[in-house]
Image (cartoon, rainbow, N blue to C red; front, side, top):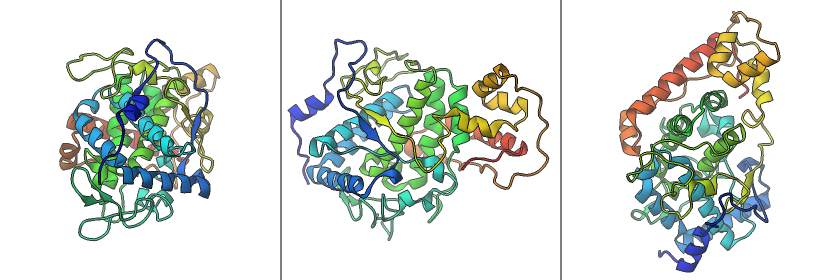
Length: 383
């Protein structure tokens, strides 16, 4: 199988308005929906389009780009802008084949307790665990695909717990990260080493390699992470950007270049402008604990004040301004549905995926204390 793309096409996809400090508004906007909210017609468009992309060699192209740049776009502030541009680049490529293509995202919070049981990982959508000695994916949208990068092999998945995947991070914990992170350096570190990493290393197979973009699930997962970033941006962090760079750049700024692409970081900071001609729809079937803070605030009212202020400082501030900060005694009963501890990432998995062991351990310790505090307070999670 050969990669069939033209230099003019790549140049067109990479081009941007370098003269404008703030990119121009898009003439048309693609709406990214939660994958379970797609109609059968919309899913058929996605299926047909990515099959054509596979035939043309685009999956090989994206897998190779992600592997080559992996060491310099992970563990640094390149992480979020690079992946936003990378996923949008994929979507734009697909729209060259079919203008109706819109990349979906997976609301992983709805399935964090037992991701393997999600309908997203079923024959109807993305397919499930790999089968046979080579752990080949035999169902779903990429059933029986042969990938060609870095060598010829079947698309592989090999769940971290046999036929199951241990719990991921809850919406409540990610909302806590969003409220406690005031800099990009903190937000990126916490997001990359929590839900981002655990999803890759829970599905495993191609997803736990540097060429993880072989799996279409990669795109849905990173769209989900990008949606979280966009909601954090909307909450007073529209142009918040700082933190360590790579390739000799000690500190990144809005003027820093996104590696591989010609864009600056500022070029991707505004959804609906420049090349970022997309928006996110809210999931229809589940409460949205991120973009609607009232949904999570309604579940926090019974928390002791010290726990609320420790883990949700913005909700604490709102409660203070609303004069609802009376000290609440810890709830004596044990909630019927408690927050589970997220899985821990093994040393072997950290080395394989290039994660910083200290950062991963710091996040695991933080998550453990969060779960202990919330469960001791009798908190009942939404999911």
